[in-house]
Length: 169
Picture 1 (cartoon, rainbow, N blue to C red):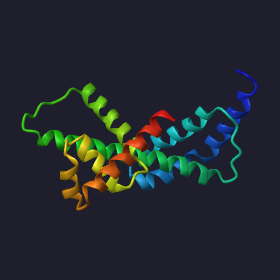
Picture 2: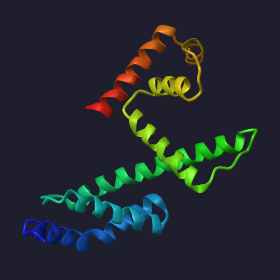
Picture 3: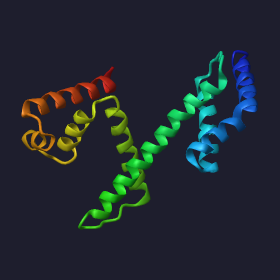
Picture 4: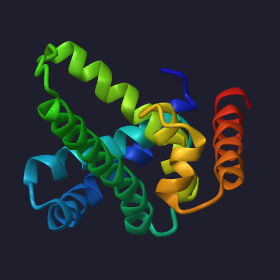
């Protein structure tokens, strides 16, 4: 192991030893599930390990809870996306049941779309999804949202620009 990695691992081991139990307890109060709390705590430390560089942390608990909170939000988002997908699947008339692999691929794609649309205002996200997923025209979207067709066009332009910048910058 290169010498530059030794301090990183040592610092992370100390951080893990001193704060892991606290982090699991902190997460357990939010998630109400010990197993999920332990998994998110582990992912928090893995995220730090993946950085591969020494981190000077003045307030370790605040730092760890910030990383863990982001992971919890990601978990909740994935669960929300999965529920919405399963509800939509159950409501389908043809009631085809995708395989576990197909479901995992769909969840992954939906999560990527949700991450792409993060940061956009609700109305812009909604217009984009109504257009791209539901196949509605701008006039239909304008009527649903109670805005002009011009406003929908601007929302779509903003959404496309946002996605393009994230994908290609």
